[in-house]
Each structure stands twice: as C-alpha cells, then as structure tokens.
Length: 376
Image (cartoon, rainbow, N blue to C red; front, top):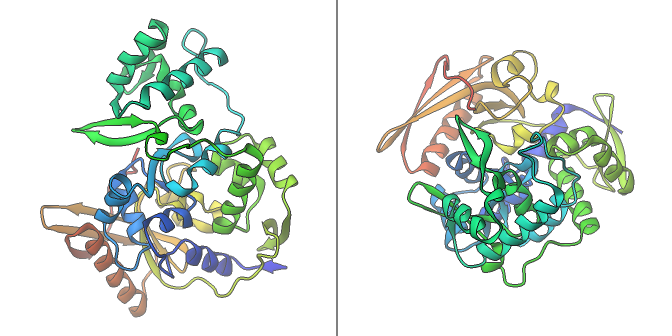
C-alpha cells in the first residue's frame, strides 16, 4: 500500500484536532501526544487551535483548577503539558528509555546519587509546591552539600548539581510543575493531587506510547520515533520490532502504522497558523516532505523544527508568521512562501480571527516579510 504525502498530511491534521476540533483541553494535549510548553503562551495557542471555541484561560483552568493537565518534563526532556489521566503511562514509558548523562566527571551525578536524589525529591515535594531555591535548600539539608554545589553551567551562571536529573525525577513520577510563585516556577509531587500515583509498568507503557505516537504521527519509522523522544535508535528499533504493526510506503519509502490502521480518508486541505513549537511541526516526519524546498531554509533552525511559528497550506509548511501583542490587540504578520488563492486568503482570515479569540485580543492581519529570527 503506497500513500501519498497529501493523504498522510490530511490524516495527521485531522487526528491532531486541526481540521476536526476535539472535545476539551486534555483531549487536545492527547491528540498531539503532548503539548510542548517551554513557552506556555504558545502551548495555550496550540491547544486553543484544536478546540471549537476554547481560550487560553481554559488551559490555565485545566492546569491549576481542574488538574486535568500536568505541566512536566515530557519527550526529549522538554517541558510539556500532558493529560493527567495519562501521566502514569507517560512516566512508565519515559522512565524506560535508556539515558546517559552528558555532564563531565566532577559534575556528573552517579547512578547511586541519582537514586538518592530521586527519593529525596519525592519526599520533599510531597509536602507542597517549592521554588528551585527552596528545593535546593531542602536537598542540602536532607542529602548533603554535594547535591547543591553550583557546578552545572547554565545561561551565564551555574545551577546546583541536582538539577541535571530534574527531568529524570519527572519521568520517575516524583516531580512536576506547580503554579508559579510570582515569577518563579515551582515543583511539586503529582501524588499530592493524584492519590496513589505511580508510573505504570514499563512494557505496557512503552507499547501504549508507540501506538499513541503512530496514531498521531504515522505512518512513521523507528528513527523518527527515536528522534521524537531523543531516545537511542537501537532501543526505538527494538520497540518497533516487538510491536504488532502494518507496513505501508509513503511516496515509495517504507513506514509503519498500527495494525489495521490503514485508512487515509482525504488529502490535506486548507490553511492553518501554528505557534512556536507546535507538535504537528515538531513531531512531523520526514522533514523534507513537511518542510519542502524553501520552507526548510525559512522555517527550520538547522534541522530543528518549532523555532518559527509556521503557516501550513494543505498540510505542509508554506510560510512563517509573527504576532505582536498589546493591551487589547494582536498584530499578526504572515509571510507566505507562495501566492495564496482567494479561498486560502479567506481561510487565513478565519485563522487570524481564531488566534485573536483564543488570546482574548482584537486581531489584525498584514501580509509582509517577517524578519524576526528563530526562538531559542
């Protein structure tokens, strides 16, 4: 079975909630296999674009009032919003990925120290929501000065030694984000509001994650799965080999889908605006098909996706855009790489109105060159 890229894109757009809106905020995060939230305002927009009429406030409510979302370290060790209902499976799967520590000797924590830190963090964070400085002070008392020595280079300063395992503690299920204290982030233990929480078994979780990934991003192959997770390629290949999958080809290249999931109802159609680090662009592979021709030069930072907000036309990147917010307005500049038809221009207007509604601001649209560089 050979599938054209247009039909692959059409299925992904639909399953990501970009053509058929999903029911709620948690369902939007699930449809993407996690919402990248290094920039929380971009994550709010990613989720809002997958809802019929949701706003950024709905995301805030889901995080801190309803607790149906969790802000934590997800794929690639980067900050994501994940459905609380799926957190045990996420932790079980992410915790099963073999990981190394790139820090040099003298800075690197040993496996034994990692275990000690994870246990201590689980205990400390069970008592509340704490800033990084508060966690550091508590670890210094409980574990010892070695854990908090400022030896990790970061942003023209040095972080305490324990912070090199923050994402591992999250994957082990003892750490996630709490609400900010002023401008400072906080960490807490998810078991505080998910009673009895513990990561699910590794084999069950890994199988679940692969099937979830292939549902959202398939057809795909193990190198793409490895890249999405920042996992060892051999490990990803073994996960694929152990799974019950169907092989298809995409534009003549072998790829895999979940067993029996071989329907591709329609080709991609329409115009979409995606913010920084939107999952559709970050997780979509192969890059050369999603970012064809000039789009690779204009919308990628090297080989990295997500650093530019992108314009999609018929499921592929066909431009970049920028937003400038003020108290009541948002000025949106779109820089297409192709001439838009009258129908596509109307769809773009609709997308701009939707962005304004999500942000709670009055939008305006300008078609012009975007000179803003990539987000770090």
